[in-house]
Length: 95
Image (cartoon, rainbow, N blue to C red; front, top):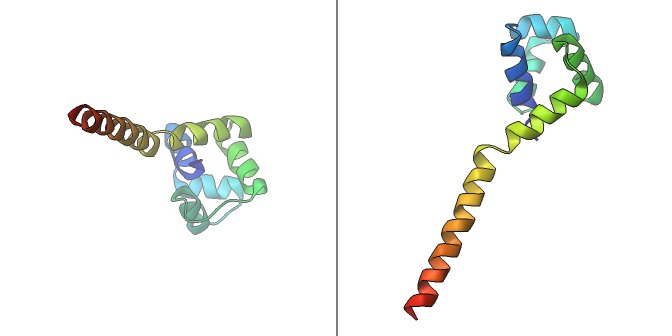
């Protein structure tokens, strides 16, 4: 789950700065920055505060976080699995 990316995405869509969001959520800018970079896990209370400050339900933020985490890494893993399967089939055909 990529909660940091989801927070950044919504914040930018709302045209908010990190300072504005941090102030509205009652957290320091440096802490928010670490959360957005996924270097610090936010507490449930902070997630609720951020969602409220962004004007969205927590469930939407969690959904977006799950959606964000599915992109490049999973696609790469899926692609690698397919590539490995094809290589395996090719080596079986050659034998």
